[in-house]
Length: 195
Image (tube, rainbow, N blue to C red):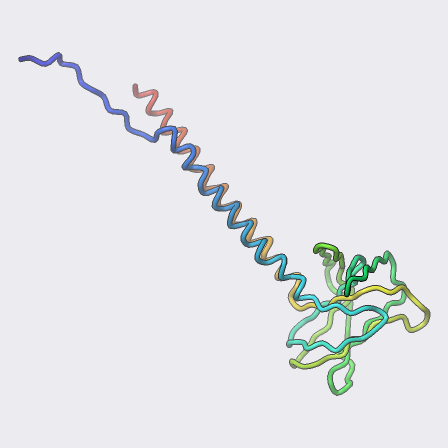
């Protein structure tokens, strides 16, 4: 018996299914982005302690820099507060012994919008020791609108880290998917040319 002398070629290279496999890193990156934002953003509200103004409240604070935000749109105990301008609003911070803690304007401009709450940074202050601090805000020279301030520590930093981490997760997924799609396309193209 003799053979026909015909060699059988086997194709090597990725099949079309690899286009779908290449999308997996993007899906994982987007899912990771969603998880990071879903776990971080709802907890940001709890890090901001609200005070209805004019008024005062004792807060337990940890050492470090704290930011006072004016909430131009807010809800406290079911009541809505909306203001556009608060001329003459002053914030005073005192420690448990009654010593005034200096407040100063923030270096940058920080804003947030979380559900029914919208605010922007108006003051910063530094706490050296953990303890109870009395925060008072009002209008010393004239009557002003009822509004809400919120005091938080590390709020802006936490928000920026969450957003940056989410974007990095998405970008890594996108870069891996792009690389895999290019590899699958070029491998399949070489395979077609060699046939």
